[in-house]
Image (cartoon, rainbow, N blue to C red):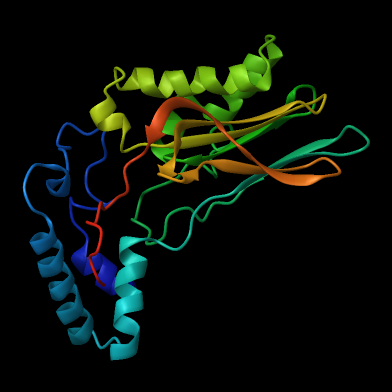
Length: 237
């Protein structure tokens, strides 16, 4: 399956130049004109390649689905104990199908995860490269140290990400970031660059303070980040 991914990825999926690269362009599927034929042709070629690689017929559709929609991602958890002790953890798995030399934000202390026993804990999921540029988790902690509440602290860092793109929505639509923030006194917030991934699928985060529940994040921009690759509805694979 990894070889199938390696042989078929291109600048029309997550593995091409990122939105901060001068070579980046609006994906073919987002430009005017029909795209269903493009996708059907691409899927057919992937199926042919899967067959040549020896992937069993009953596994080929699953392999292709996992390449277009990677099955793994990142999660974060911050905790405050009854003794007032804090801890935070962020998984380093991230997006499936690793590119040699690429390091995500999760293992970068201060980017994907940071905890300060005097202030609080913060972590992130989303576009790792963008988070590294702003040292997201550490910046949030420092914002709280200087008096911002958790929501203000997170929104400030999201604005820094947007500022790095000159607030260019064409590019920002292909980026997303969610911060999970817990202050030393138990105050918390979940903030995100966009409302969610798609209509009816807003960003949410879990809270457990004696009662467990899901809460929706506060978004910097109303709307939804773009699916990638943006396969047309009704495409069978």
